[in-house]
Image: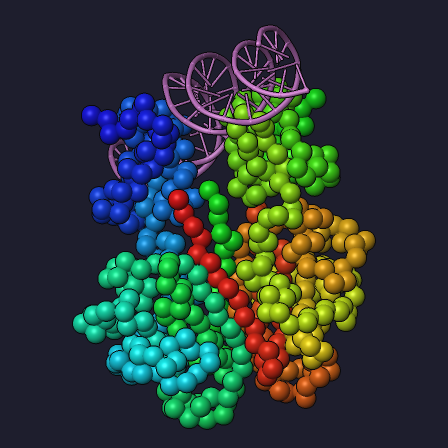
Length: 245
Length: 245
DNA sequence: TTCATTAAGTTGTCAAGACAACTTGTCAAA
DNA sequence: TTTGACAAGTTGTCTTGACAACTTAATGAA
């Protein structure tokens, strides 16, 4: 009962990769679990082991699978998967550092008309907005103000946001996956409101990051301002060069 | 006369990839030219064709080679390719802003033994180092200190650096293309030396970026510290999500 | 000359097998 | 119980061989 079509114009290893990717997506091979071994896949699909390896090679390069010699081939944990925002994500980048990070919403989600601001793409329009604070080991480290497009994120007010990655939410609830983002960095004096949350004196220099996130066909769908204390924690990111497989 | 050692712990296809990369770098296979065909490499090196393909696969993925079915495998032209470092590049990101940016070397290239510094991967070792200053519209904006691996950038002291993008140099002279990079951001007080170059008072808060650049098979090959004035110019970047197929 | 055909060469895909290197669990001995 | 040796299973590497799909250049005919 082979699912693969040997006469197809699509190479067998691409077909097998599609099957595996679909099974992973469907939860048939849960994250962290081992998938069937190469000889086993070779037998069940009636193809050679090199072809199986070509297929899993694709998924390994896409960071979907991970090979462990002598042990097996495993489904990568979603956190390590290619998440559009993880490039610049905040919760994610902190989580990887191994620090105990807690995030709480300090200003609940509401619909507002955004005032004039040349850097805020929602200026003069309505948008969802909220503010959240991340603490590392108890110390306030990052205050984040976000604005969302009301059209694309319709019904956002019915979804629990506490403690969730926003990119994960965008993916799961709205099937939106960021395409690109732009951000800039500057040193700014901390305003009084933010100073309270960050437990600083007003006027203390902080790192201010302004970020725009673009989705396919919908640029500037998310805008955020990040205010970071960098006295105890630094703001870090990892960049990977886009792969062309 | 095989150059490859079958008894080595290093896999044959890695050895062959190294040989090919070296020949490309040395100009033996010029950019745009065809390299010997797979059967030919297979014969001359006395190895199987799949092994040859494994080797060229590495270089294709590093965007060093390009396969054309029915025609051959070709050395990629350095210029028309996406610059890996442009993701995090400094001159490049400034240039895109449309501002008149000039970069000058304020501390010439030299070989030094790097002192202890937990964040500098060259600490306790020898490295190339240099310091350069970028001005936007005449105003000092960015002071950059760089450290390079002496092994990978052998002969760096014979190459004119003035006014060139370093990633372009790495690509064209050493056929090195960054794979990934990590950087962190913090607010720091400007040290006296940097203050002179940036035309600030010592102690003024500036943006300090520490960056590590990784090349295929050679992590931490470049380390740099960027000190930015952000009063008139911001430090910006664009992120693209890696595409999959 | 111009165009279509042909042949040679190249990469793309796939098979079957072999051994090496490594991991893990089992089992026996201390 | 703890330790060590062993066996089974898995991925890593490599070989030989084959045919398909495609490109290019040479060849021949109009």
